[in-house]
Length: 160
Image (cartoon, rainbow, N blue to C red; front, top):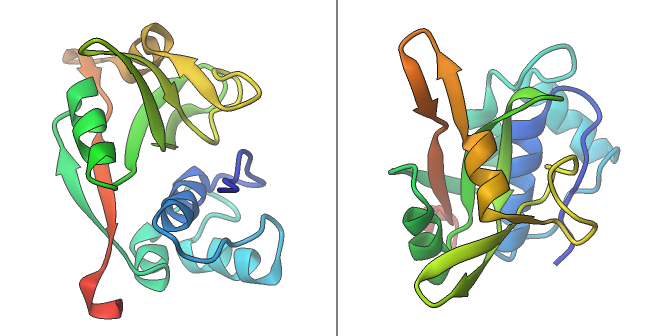
């Protein structure tokens, strides 16, 4: 599968949604294409974050379910054919959305994750260690350490 591994504006959530659609077998949307540019405007990401991402979810026929933010949730969802959006804190992007599309497991432990659109933290093939992922999932806030959100995508049954 060919995932988007970069973005042009502040549309990380849109890239995540497109990657989820690709994972789920839908036709890809190429970065910079006319369709992509229409989606950027649809979600309001040309000059700010994608504040209307639900519109792209509808267009791409995606639904999601919120997950408990822990590695087991990622593994459980991927085993059921659902990619997992994660909210992380990146030194480069600030709060950032990316999609976990694969996991490497040794014994019962997750050791590596394949995460498109997180290039500063992954190798050339989009893999990162569990230790690095855990580091960027953890963020400091005024209420102390917290973890970003996790949600698993699936195709809306109404459109199949």
